[in-house]
Amino acid sequence: MRILSAEFTCGADNVRSLPPPTLGEVAFGGRSNVGKSTLMNALAQRKSLVRTSRTPGLTRQLNFFALTASAKPGEEPFSLYLVDLPGYGFAKVSKKEHLGWGPLMDAYLGQRPTLRAVTIIVDVRRGVEDEDAQLLDFLTRGTSREAAKPIEVLLVATKLDKISKSERKPALARVTDGAKRAGFTGKPIGVSGETGEGTDLLWDRIQKAIL
Ligand SMILES: Nc1nc2c(ncn2[C@@H]2O[C@H](COP(=O)(O)OP(=O)(O)O)[C@@H](O)[C@H]2O)c(=O)[nH]1
Ligand SMILES: [Mg+2]
Image (cartoon, rainbow, N blue to C red; front, side, top):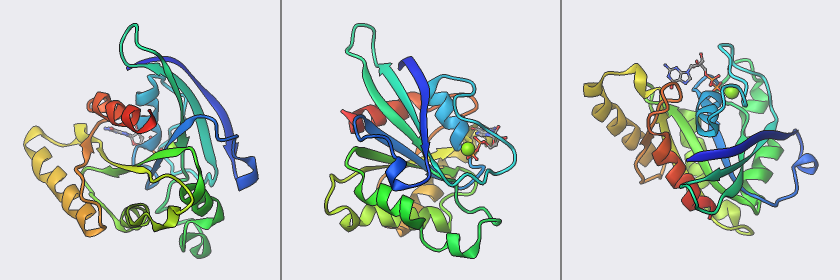
């Protein structure tokens, strides 16, 4: 994928501050520190479009990044938003916030008309954990989006570079099994945000979901 432009558009901490629903959107969710920002930067082919850190962030807002990309030279470019969802599974988040996704996430995931795909990122070494399973379950039930088009769920196992070649197959099989228990029957896409491995395949899936 050739990225022709990538820029931060806005952050939204309530439904009214969401940008107008003009471009197709792919949202990224995952536990804090799973490697979400690193993967989004790898997809955008930018070093620091999305801030990365060693300390899990407290940001509760949705951040929108507008990208224009072209799959092959001479092919019509397309535009989309990558949407950074708040990281979950962070112990310092209050008990109250922990229960449920909060009104913004509920409204966004349940009703956003331009939301085409949600990428759920798990650590290939840890597999599908409780909150990943909750999100998978919420998205695959589908009933929560009566008013809007169904969305594609993309399950991504990242930090593939952290395990040896021989560990990959069993680790990915564990991710597949964990997802199945949450009602998701697809296969995970193995990637590394660090080396960029697997991001071409992920882009293919994103492009298909957007167009
Ligand atoms: N080895 C390796 N480290 C990664 C990878 N992705 C992220 N990291 C590291 O994991 C930490 C958290 O990454 P970040 O992208 O900020 O996570 P986020 O909280 O999910 O946005 C950082 O120290 C990254 O350098 C990866 O694919 N491979
Ligand atoms: Mg981040």
